[in-house]
Length: 456
Ligand code: ARG
Image 1 (cartoon, rainbow, N blue to C red):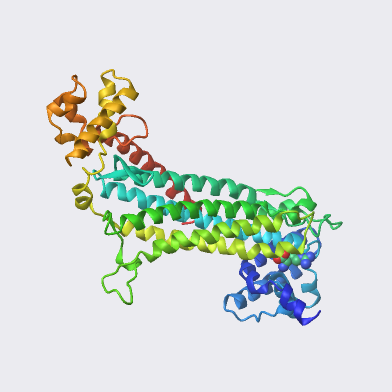
Image 2 (image 1 turned 30 degrees about the vertical axis):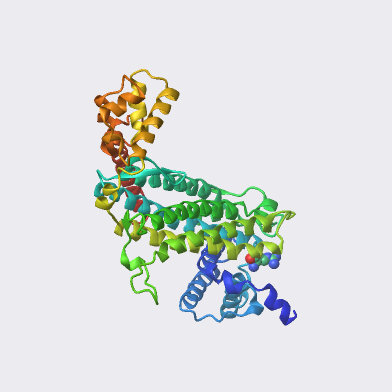
C-alpha cells in the first residue's frame, strides 16, 4: 500500500476511542466460539487474558498507534497475534470488520446515550430546585420578545423541564433501536461456521439480534437518530442560553450568573461576560452540522458495507462530546444563578402585563372577546398617554371607555392579580404550578432511584 493511501484511509486517529467496546465485543465473540467448539477452553482463556493485557496497555497509552494498521480492530488483533501466534489468529473466525465496527459503535452509542440521559435528569432536577428557591417570584413572559403576560418564574423552569423530558423520551426511544446486536452478520451474507448469535447478543446485553446480515453492516440509522436526538438537546440548550444571556444583561437585570462560569475582559475591567452560555449557543451549530454530515454521508449509499461508513465516526463523536460538555456546564449554571426579584418587581408594572387579565375579567361579565379586546386597547392608550399603569386609571377614565366599567375591575390588575386570575390546566396560577412541581418532584425522584438501581 502506498504511504499516501495509508495516511488517507487510516481511522485509528479517531476510532481508537472504541477500544473498550472492541475488546468487550471480542471477548463475547471468543466466548461464543468456545461454547460452539470453535475454540478450546485453553484458547479462550489465553485470548481473554491477553485482550485484558492489551486493554491495560491502551488505557495507559502504551500500545503504539500505527497508521499502517489502519483501525482499532487491526491494532488489537495484531497485538493479540503478536502475543499468542496461531491462537490469536483464530479470534476473527466467523467475524468481519463490517459487523465488528457496527457492534463497537452500537455499544459506544448506547453508553453515550445513557450518559446523556443522566445529565438530562440532573439538569431537570437543577431546574426543579430553582422552583423552590424562586417560588412566588413573578416575571414577564414574552412573545415576539415583547413583554406579554406575568407568570411565576417557576412556570419558566417547568417549561425547560418539559423540553428536557421530551429529550429523555427521544433518548430512550433511540436507545431501543441502538440496542440490537449486529455481531455474526460477518461480511455481508452470514457465515457457514456454526455460531450462536443469540448467545453473543446476550453477553453484550443487547435486547435483540439483527435479523438480516446485509442490512447489518450498512445500517447507520442509529447513528443519525442519536445525533438528531443530540441536535434537539443542543437546540433546547441554545434557546435557554440565549434567554439567560439576555436576562443577565444590564438592560434586563433579571438574573446573576455564577462568576465561576463567566469571564472577564482583558481591556474593560468592569465586564462579566456570559461566555459559557454564548459557547453553548454557538456549539449547538456544530451538532446541527454533525447531523447534516451524517445525512449526506449516507444518502445514496448502496447496500451493504461501503468504506464511506468509516467517516461516520468524527461527526458522531463530536455530537456526543459537544452535547455532553454543554449539559455538564448547564447544570452548575442553572443551580448557581441568582434571580433578581427586586429588580424584576421594580419594573413589573411596565409593559401592561395585566391587560389580558383585565380583558378576561370584562369577558367574564358577558362582553364578547373582540369587544373587550378593543375596549382594553382603548384603556391602554389612555394610560400610555399619561404614563400611568392600568391600575392607576381613574373611575372616570374607566367609565369613559364603557359606562359599565368601575373600580371592581381593579382586582384583576397588577401582576399578582393577573397571576391569581389564571385557572386553566398548565397555566401560571400558583396552585397549578404547585401541582406541577409536586408531579415533577415525584417523577424525577423515581427516575433517580431507578437509575441508581441500574448503576449507582
Ligand atoms: N475502519 C472501518 C470503519 O470504520 C472498519 C471496517 C472496515 N471494513 C472493511 N471492509 N474495510 O468503517
